[in-house]
Image (cartoon, rainbow, N blue to C red; front, side, top):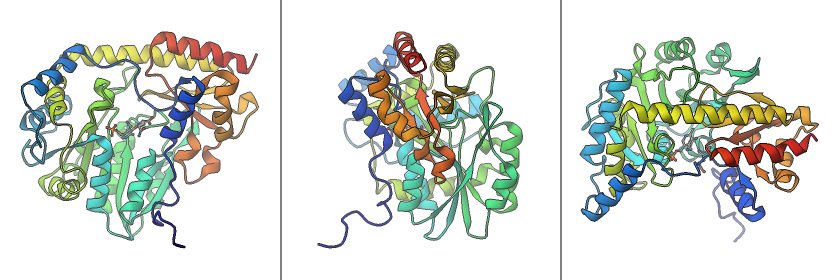
Length: 390
Ligand code: PMP
Ligand code: GLN
């Protein structure tokens, strides 16, 4: 066979950086600040709720296609109570196999071959692959470092829209930069979407991880946006159960139905018993969410300060559980080479941000560290990293 086995749409993607770097961490016994997953599980009572569901025979067989009613109403209540957004749990909520499937299903459903999809660069790696699988063309709009933060250039965004643009794929709080888009920025994006009649798919999996009193604002709540926005959420980050893969979308009946058309042929359904447990998790008291935020905020400070002391330039994140750094003060310019040698040099694993860029050179000197780890693990990582500049 002379033809390559992997089709040309996927050929450029290789193995995801998360798998590569977690394998490197395991192989070298390094502290894994690469792939974003917590090293402690979420609330005990939610684990127990999953056990109870399993024992009670809830969700052990195929759950309903749109998700179990308990979870769909908990998601609708969450959007209403948090953001004043009202969604009909039957027609406007769809449970997915994590946000990953929601992203895939939304793009496969809404993008026609040849359509352009605007994504904020650096972008989460599955966006590019899913746009490609849908036959779309990705059009990156680059968030640029400016005075210690990453900023969206609204003129650049406007200029990126063409007659072929189908949708804008947003992500706020933003992985990997930690940027939380402001009301003013989101309003400008919304006005552009309305003016040019674009859809918006917005990945809000880090909605609860915002610090320093910053507020997460769903773009669906802005004028003219509810009917053109697919909002994506996930239990993975909010409840520290990334392996359960419970995600969801909220959107108008027409958009939900379109996304469901694609989703039904991907997994059909998933995570049966876990759906019941996450329905309970979404109804945890406000104190749970406040404690999560305070805990991660303290870890953000610990790691950001430690990285600065170790000689990195640090982009202190307003949200997510990642901190992006610039390695140039350490005399390095190539994030890939830096991350590949970091286990040997310091016993720590991180992610080179260049993988999240089309313009690889724009991302070359940036490296992402995750701080969703136990305090003592972060302290040990910092002390090892300080050896880099010693
Ligand atoms: N979107 C972003 C921005 C992410 O960082 C991740 C990784 N958690 C996902 C989506 C995937 O989420 P899930 O694990 O729910 O599939
Ligand atoms: N979202 C996680 C991250 O950015 C990784 C999830 C995955 O491995 N696909 O680190």
